[in-house]
Image 1 (tube, one colour):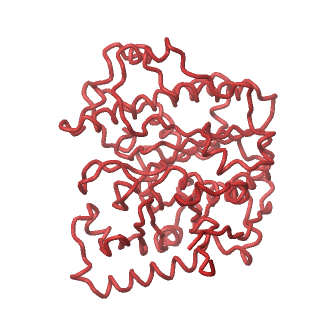
Image 2 (cartoon, rainbow, N blue to C red; image 1 turned 90 degrees about the vertical axis):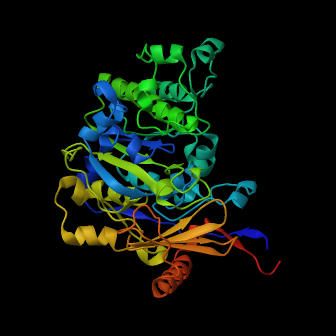
Image 3 (cartoon, one colour; image 1 turned 90 degrees about the horizontal axis):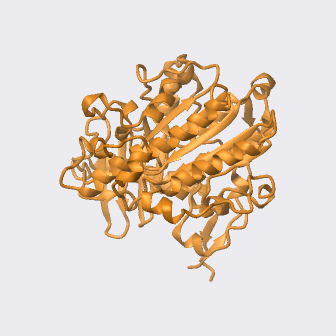
Length: 444
């Protein structure tokens, strides 16, 4: 049956704490393409030789942040991560949607922009990606977003020979945006750090020397799968991406903007490295494809750093709810659109969380999906059901006692399986926005 557009209710917001709203800072959001938590040394699993640090820039942010160690993506896809972060909803892009006109079907749900407008943000620098602009940036903001006659300069022959990646060009664009700001203008920057996307390549010697590593980046490969060239190259590219972030941080500090800047670091999705016989992410819902890094730095909140990370279950949609809470802005038409699935992480950032705060985040359900007709359901972050609709195969895992997802409980725990299957059905019915504003027409 054909797909037809469906208009979903639009969320609205109002100021409830003017003091928080008036004092809300500028914002930088960096999404990390396919970067798993264990690839970031601040997460404590990159023990390199000679005291080397795999991700010094991210580690420096981590020291000023609260680190969340139990975060997941609901859909292991970059585009869908952008939507869930910006809308705070289970809105996703389907493959079939790509042939339909985007218009403003998605951007009208950009709740992050609605909240930041309340705080006085007037300048926007969105991630430099055609897809991001089509999906996230509504037509009415194209004229106030950062625009240039040549918004993206091509890599020169000399730069190509040295081994420059597009990420360095994105950093240069952010610098030009900062140059364009008038004194006192409040701004929002979102950049997608995409150079860790496949295919993965080793860093050329000339580029490594330019980055300050005359001996190359082979040292970053420690703990990689020695039989897998992709994984070794991936570890190099994570360090290379971190260097790009370092350039951005150095610029912000030189301009005096870092200390009073809110920074959100979030992964778009995870990455599989043969834990279940597969690499990368798109077709599966095992935890390596879903687990993501999340770090939040906020001026005036000391942060908990590497010494006191937080293990509360986190989903990408929590970021919008947290930002709204920090900004003193509340959802004003919940009776029309329904509540947000996210919970605020502010109490955890302050170190003032109660058991009730933890339970609110942990005792909830989560829909999962992939590009390839596979869906899933997490119940209270204890059990996960994966349904491969093409083959009719089901997988049921105990996430608490079997975090590696090695034992399928479908046959041994039939009652839990039936409960999870019914939970998946009910959650799908309760979250119509999960289907991204399209529906199948049975009448045509």
